[in-house]
Length: 126
Image (cartoon, rainbow, N blue to C red):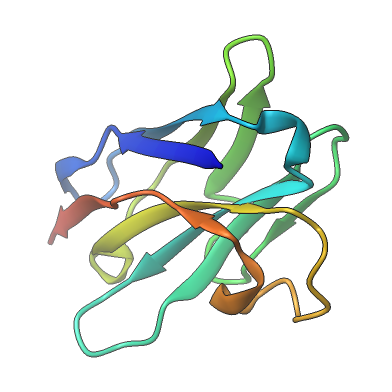
């Protein structure tokens, strides 16, 4: 089992920044990659960024490229999402998720991920 706990959400004005953290515990050796998803009211959960657990390969949704940066600190078993130049449309609950690498579901699909955190609210005011 893998446990994920997000933190760092909050209320920020447009143009501001936030850094989300995801503390990972348990069977971390079973993790292939980590993703940050978000879900706004009435919308589907979407992949925002993804990073390999043991490599530097990253992926970003077009909507956040150039503004968000995903990173990890394996010594601390923590994954981060640095969010700059936030926009009102970034408002959502943000979730971190762990991919064990066994699924053939596309990397952007929530069903590919085996473990989820409880989510943290990010609200961007205009």
